[in-house]
Length: 203
Image 1 (cartoon, helix red, strand yellow):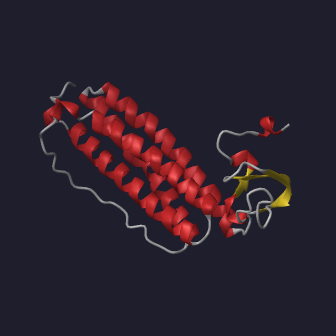
Image 2 (image 1 turned 60 degrees about the vertical axis):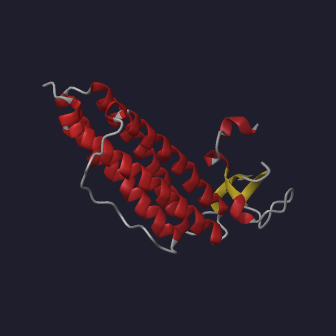
Image 3 (image 1 turned 180 degrees about the vertical axis):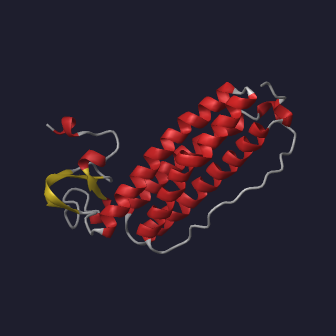
């Protein structure tokens, strides 16, 4: 069916999504600050990296509302309070929220957009939902490393990449400090998980 956008449920869902993504961005920046305090720059980087993507999602949803510029949209919604000094818990809470967006929220928003005839909006919801699954997987992976005390230790020899200077160390444990830039162990990440790198580039 075709629905007038101004009277649609889709425009409300877009504003809910915009609010949710905006809040997620801020929650992740707060979590990044906590990780920084605890001298875990690699976790800080994970939260910041994801926060920047959430900001982009918010902008995509907001742009869909352009024709209503000047209006005010009143929405209801529930949003999480994720405050903790436990970094693993912050990662797990973020994982839960990202999976909820993927499994439930954005799927339902996409279905409603399709029903109301807003196919570009439907596409945005479905594509961003898949990205949220990647976010959830990422948060879960690093939570598991922390919970198993394996953030800087591996069962097998692997590469460790310094996020500060790019030095790569081979071993089962990241160095206590980088021999090149002397930043501490908290800057090291498994090479295969470092941005823009892959095992194939290590030769």
